[in-house]
Length: 192
Image 1: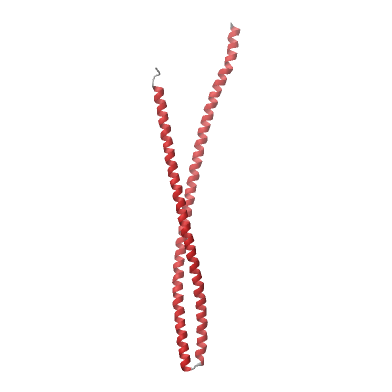
Image 2: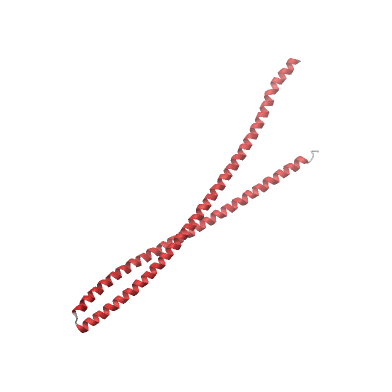
Protein backbone atom coordinates (compact mmCIF):
# COMPACT_ATOMS: atom_id res chain seq x y z
CA UNK A 1 0.00 0.00 0.00
CA UNK A 2 2.82 2.27 0.83
CA UNK A 3 4.36 1.76 -2.57
CA UNK A 4 1.13 2.64 -4.31
CA UNK A 5 0.77 5.78 -2.21
CA UNK A 6 4.35 6.84 -3.05
CA UNK A 7 3.75 6.16 -6.76
CA UNK A 8 0.56 8.22 -6.71
CA UNK A 9 2.39 11.08 -5.02
CA UNK A 10 5.21 10.85 -7.55
CA UNK A 11 2.71 11.00 -10.45
CA UNK A 12 0.52 13.78 -8.97
CA UNK A 13 3.35 15.97 -7.61
CA UNK A 14 4.66 17.08 -11.03
CA UNK A 15 1.13 17.98 -12.15
CA UNK A 16 0.54 20.04 -9.00
CA UNK A 17 3.91 21.73 -9.31
CA UNK A 18 3.28 22.53 -12.99
CA UNK A 19 -0.17 23.91 -12.26
CA UNK A 20 1.20 26.06 -9.46
CA UNK A 21 4.14 27.22 -11.59
CA UNK A 22 1.99 28.11 -14.62
CA UNK A 23 -0.40 30.05 -12.39
CA UNK A 24 2.51 32.03 -10.93
CA UNK A 25 3.92 32.49 -14.41
CA UNK A 26 0.57 33.84 -15.67
CA UNK A 27 0.40 36.24 -12.75
CA UNK A 28 3.94 37.39 -13.43
CA UNK A 29 3.19 37.89 -17.13
CA UNK A 30 0.04 39.86 -16.40
CA UNK A 31 1.85 42.09 -13.88
CA UNK A 32 4.73 42.57 -16.34
CA UNK A 33 2.24 43.49 -19.06
CA UNK A 34 0.53 45.92 -16.70
CA UNK A 35 3.85 47.58 -15.78
CA UNK A 36 4.87 47.74 -19.44
CA UNK A 37 1.54 49.33 -20.33
CA UNK A 38 1.88 51.88 -17.52
CA UNK A 39 5.44 52.65 -18.56
CA UNK A 40 4.39 53.10 -22.19
CA UNK A 41 1.54 55.43 -21.16
CA UNK A 42 3.90 57.45 -18.98
CA UNK A 43 6.40 57.77 -21.86
CA UNK A 44 3.59 58.89 -24.19
CA UNK A 45 2.50 61.53 -21.67
CA UNK A 46 6.05 62.82 -21.35
CA UNK A 47 6.42 62.95 -25.14
CA UNK A 48 3.16 64.86 -25.46
CA UNK A 49 4.23 67.34 -22.82
CA UNK A 50 7.57 67.87 -24.57
CA UNK A 51 5.78 68.31 -27.92
CA UNK A 52 3.36 70.80 -26.40
CA UNK A 53 6.19 72.75 -24.75
CA UNK A 54 8.19 72.78 -27.99
CA UNK A 55 5.18 73.89 -30.01
CA UNK A 56 4.30 76.63 -27.54
CA UNK A 57 7.91 77.81 -27.46
CA UNK A 58 8.05 77.87 -31.26
CA UNK A 59 4.80 79.86 -31.35
CA UNK A 60 6.11 82.43 -28.87
CA UNK A 61 9.46 82.69 -30.64
CA UNK A 62 7.83 83.26 -34.01
CA UNK A 63 5.48 85.83 -32.51
CA UNK A 64 8.43 87.69 -30.98
CA UNK A 65 10.23 87.66 -34.34
CA UNK A 66 7.09 89.00 -36.01
CA UNK A 67 6.79 91.83 -33.50
CA UNK A 68 10.46 92.74 -33.93
CA UNK A 69 10.15 92.69 -37.73
CA UNK A 70 7.03 94.88 -37.61
CA UNK A 71 8.90 97.46 -35.51
CA UNK A 72 11.79 97.37 -37.99
CA UNK A 73 9.31 97.77 -40.84
CA UNK A 74 7.76 100.87 -39.21
CA UNK A 75 11.21 102.44 -38.80
CA UNK A 76 12.02 101.72 -42.44
CA UNK A 77 8.76 103.29 -43.57
CA UNK A 78 9.50 106.41 -41.51
CA UNK A 79 13.00 106.56 -43.00
CA UNK A 80 11.48 106.12 -46.46
CA UNK A 81 9.11 109.07 -45.90
CA UNK A 82 11.98 111.22 -44.62
CA UNK A 83 14.11 110.39 -47.64
CA UNK A 84 11.22 111.08 -50.03
CA UNK A 85 10.69 114.48 -48.38
CA UNK A 86 14.45 115.17 -48.55
CA UNK A 87 14.52 114.19 -52.23
CA UNK A 88 11.60 116.52 -53.02
CA UNK A 89 13.37 119.32 -51.18
CA UNK A 90 16.54 118.77 -53.18
CA UNK A 91 14.59 118.67 -56.43
CA UNK A 92 12.99 122.01 -55.51
CA UNK A 93 16.44 123.41 -54.79
CA UNK A 94 17.63 122.18 -58.19
CA UNK A 95 14.67 123.82 -59.93
CA UNK A 96 15.34 127.08 -58.10
CA UNK A 97 19.05 126.93 -58.97
CA UNK A 98 18.25 126.27 -62.65
CA UNK A 99 15.85 129.23 -62.72
CA UNK A 100 18.43 131.41 -60.99
CA UNK A 101 21.15 130.30 -63.40
CA UNK A 102 18.99 131.11 -66.45
CA UNK A 103 18.27 134.55 -65.13
CA UNK A 104 21.75 135.50 -63.95
CA UNK A 105 24.13 133.46 -66.09
CA UNK A 106 26.32 132.89 -63.04
CA UNK A 107 29.12 130.30 -63.43
CA UNK A 108 29.03 129.45 -59.69
CA UNK A 109 25.40 128.48 -60.10
CA UNK A 110 26.37 125.74 -62.59
CA UNK A 111 28.69 124.26 -60.00
CA UNK A 112 25.90 124.28 -57.40
CA UNK A 113 23.52 122.69 -59.91
CA UNK A 114 25.97 119.82 -60.51
CA UNK A 115 26.46 119.33 -56.77
CA UNK A 116 22.70 119.30 -56.21
CA UNK A 117 22.26 116.79 -59.06
CA UNK A 118 24.86 114.54 -57.38
CA UNK A 119 23.03 114.87 -54.06
CA UNK A 120 19.74 114.02 -55.77
CA UNK A 121 21.30 110.94 -57.39
CA UNK A 122 22.62 109.77 -54.01
CA UNK A 123 19.24 110.41 -52.40
CA UNK A 124 17.47 108.46 -55.15
CA UNK A 125 19.92 105.59 -54.73
CA UNK A 126 19.40 105.64 -50.97
CA UNK A 127 15.63 105.80 -51.44
CA UNK A 128 15.72 102.82 -53.82
CA UNK A 129 17.72 100.85 -51.27
CA UNK A 130 15.23 101.71 -48.52
CA UNK A 131 12.33 100.79 -50.82
CA UNK A 132 13.86 97.36 -51.43
CA UNK A 133 14.42 96.92 -47.67
CA UNK A 134 10.78 97.85 -47.02
CA UNK A 135 9.63 95.35 -49.63
CA UNK A 136 11.87 92.65 -48.17
CA UNK A 137 10.61 93.46 -44.69
CA UNK A 138 7.00 93.17 -45.89
CA UNK A 139 7.70 89.72 -47.33
CA UNK A 140 9.39 88.65 -44.11
CA UNK A 141 6.42 89.89 -42.08
CA UNK A 142 4.02 87.89 -44.25
CA UNK A 143 6.22 84.82 -43.84
CA UNK A 144 6.26 85.26 -40.05
CA UNK A 145 2.48 85.72 -40.00
CA UNK A 146 2.08 82.41 -41.83
CA UNK A 147 4.53 80.76 -39.42
CA UNK A 148 2.65 82.16 -36.42
CA UNK A 149 -0.65 80.90 -37.80
CA UNK A 150 0.84 77.46 -38.50
CA UNK A 151 2.40 77.26 -35.02
CA UNK A 152 -0.86 78.40 -33.45
CA UNK A 153 -2.84 75.71 -35.29
CA UNK A 154 -0.26 73.06 -34.39
CA UNK A 155 -0.34 74.13 -30.75
CA UNK A 156 -4.15 74.03 -30.68
CA UNK A 157 -4.16 70.59 -32.31
CA UNK A 158 -1.72 69.24 -29.72
CA UNK A 159 -3.78 70.69 -26.88
CA UNK A 160 -6.96 69.19 -28.34
CA UNK A 161 -5.26 65.79 -28.78
CA UNK A 162 -3.96 65.94 -25.21
CA UNK A 163 -7.44 66.76 -23.87
CA UNK A 164 -9.00 63.91 -25.86
CA UNK A 165 -6.43 61.45 -24.55
CA UNK A 166 -7.01 62.67 -21.00
CA UNK A 167 -10.72 62.12 -21.49
CA UNK A 168 -10.13 58.60 -22.85
CA UNK A 169 -7.84 57.71 -19.95
CA UNK A 170 -10.41 58.99 -17.48
CA UNK A 171 -13.12 56.90 -19.15
CA UNK A 172 -10.84 53.83 -19.05
CA UNK A 173 -10.19 54.39 -15.34
CA UNK A 174 -13.90 54.72 -14.64
CA UNK A 175 -14.59 51.56 -16.66
CA UNK A 176 -11.89 49.65 -14.76
CA UNK A 177 -13.31 50.84 -11.42
CA UNK A 178 -16.82 49.72 -12.46
CA UNK A 179 -15.49 46.31 -13.49
CA UNK A 180 -13.72 45.90 -10.15
CA UNK A 181 -16.86 46.90 -8.29
CA UNK A 182 -18.93 44.43 -10.34
CA UNK A 183 -16.42 41.65 -9.63
CA UNK A 184 -16.51 42.42 -5.92
CA UNK A 185 -20.31 42.47 -5.95
CA UNK A 186 -20.48 39.16 -7.81
CA UNK A 187 -18.05 37.56 -5.33
CA UNK A 188 -20.12 38.77 -2.37
CA UNK A 189 -23.34 37.27 -3.72
CA UNK A 190 -23.76 33.66 -2.60
CA UNK A 191 -23.97 31.10 -5.34
CA UNK A 192 -27.31 29.23 -5.09
